[in-house]
Image 1 (cartoon, rainbow, N blue to C red):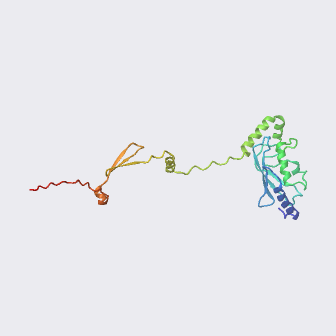
Image 2 (cartoon, helix red, strand yellow):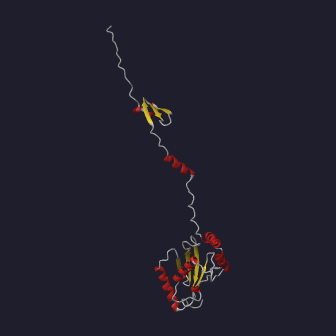
Image 3 (cartoon, rainbow, N blue to C red):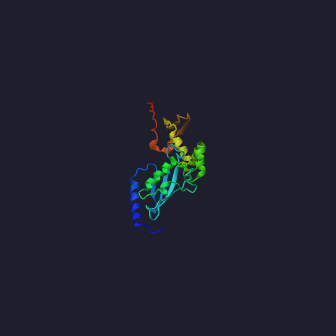
Length: 232
């Protein structure tokens, strides 16, 4: 590319500011790091055979833009009589009807209209134009199939599988299950009887008096003893 004109750079910066102000809806149009290369997306118009598709486009600006028309190509395959397999577009405003008064915003709106109303009188792919006029039903069916095959956005990836371990899952299950009933403890003498109420089982623990020490032992029972003393 030859050295751009000062007027060209001024015009490009103006279009960048204008695009930010416009309500493009689902259409996108942004410059890359190179101000002379733009990228955009064009959703299939509602009610057309391209509905549901999203078509990527590339825009290359000449060094003397806007005095020469931009070169616009489709990067997404599309079944359209005015768009070739290489993505070249046959539309009058990008050829002999170009004017410096036009802008990239108006170009992309014209492309959206071209998807809704193709021009069979000036086709870039004559076979598709012939099918359009002779067998419209087959044309529309093929265009929808291409849209589904090449332009339908890919669904988002599924969420990653859970990283919880089996023990964590089992632990959660135990935590969420029935809570155990409290254990009942009955003290009988020095023995301890433990009753598992939920399971019905019983365990008996016998305390060791000697191990517990004298402080924990019960005081012995002292029986009063009567001693008879003979006077003899």
